[in-house]
Length: 618
DNA sequence: ATAGGGTTAG
Image (cartoon, rainbow, N blue to C red; front, side):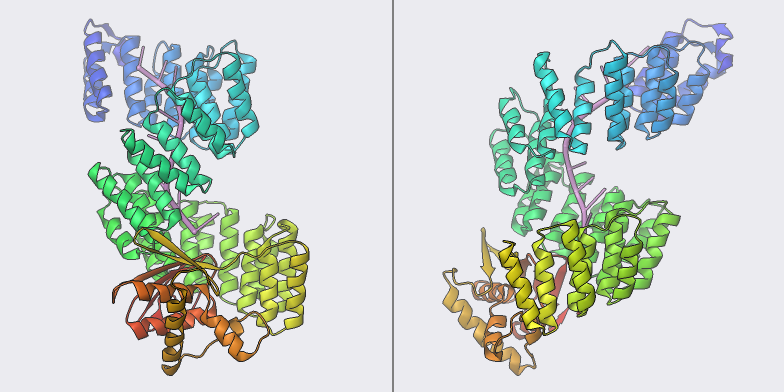
């Protein structure tokens, strides 16, 4: 650009204005042609023009060209420095942003805000807070609304309630005149670090609430498991005439996913269609997960091709959906397609791929992808990936490999990893390892009811009834309560919940009669009850009775009684399905000619015509 | 002219 300094030209302002227009439209092409004309004419550009040029390239993500322009600028003012710093920060080159920032002679509040928000937005929350405190220490500058909003957002991500509260206190002390963004960050900070009630107080005190405030609190409720509160708030939002946007709708679809309610999810989908937001990336990504988690993999499949722009989350959501429904090979094919089309997987995509391998028993492929993740995509394994690998080996019955892997892991195995080994021990009846795993699990997570229960169940599965009883007794003594197995299904707008031997439901007599009839019919078809699934030492006819009244069977009987022929039944369960239920439901699906979809703690089973989509591997 | 808040994944 040295040629631009040859002549002074009075039309510098004219070109500066042209650049301004390109800038406003984020139109890189027209901006480039203006740049070319400036060079061609040998125009001596003003600082104003050059700053506009710089800003244009930054806004249009051409960071390297921006840097060139920046280097060749004869005079750089603070504005130019700030622009290049924020350009680097926004494009994710945080280190380069920091290098420029460190070279600055004079830093104003915008410079500090650029570096703090740069770190924060790229996930370097600790560094963001470090810069924030350096700013307070080393400069005479006072934080403004931008600084505070970013710092609070970093506190939210780190769940640092203490620092968050200090910042809040500072704002009260200095009677800081808050603006929407800061208050909204406060809502998020409190709700993410365990103070949803405080978040609600702030929300209630707002004079005017924008979409972000509504969304922030809805998300807060959802993440704290308060789905009903989230739904209520969404209704209030609509009633008060506030218009949800794609962020709000994506969050509400996530609520539907947690509720695993197809009806609820469909309603949000309808709202999204009416507001013409259904095809936005965030909403359509969330739709895949919602339909999948509500049991309708078909609907999730139909949403996927409608995406105009598929991002990493789109692919990941679909891969995980397929994996959870037992279409492991298809999930892997989709992953390969994703790579072939030049998309970058992230660490969560790989969780999905490993889960896909686990659910269909593809041990070798799982090992291959685990290596590929580290070598090709340079993604460091997280605790989730380690647990996936343990699960991959364990479920396939390779308990020795699972144990070797968990012992060699570079991090301390968490409760999920040991819990997974324990579950595999029960399936593959390995008592010795189960004892080790239970012991280790209780070390990491004392009072884990699952550890006791799984150990007792393993004893039972191996026929060691006295040992099993001992574990149960010590559980009682320690006051550890086992999670009760529950199954539920939604009928019209009501959720019907069943426990084993449930006696509370108004239709109980009809349900029990139905189940007794089914039991006899499927036995005639060749069904053999799996007494190994009964976890107590009892007479065979009592065992028979117990099996017949497992919660998922009651839910199915209820569903059959209350829905028209051919309707698909969607049952949700909080624990894993037992062997007996799995076998029985296969027969039932054939007997009544219906599709029965059961979601258990880890995956979906599609029963149809006497077979299950998991091919009996789960 | 440069800077800020809310979403989707096991």
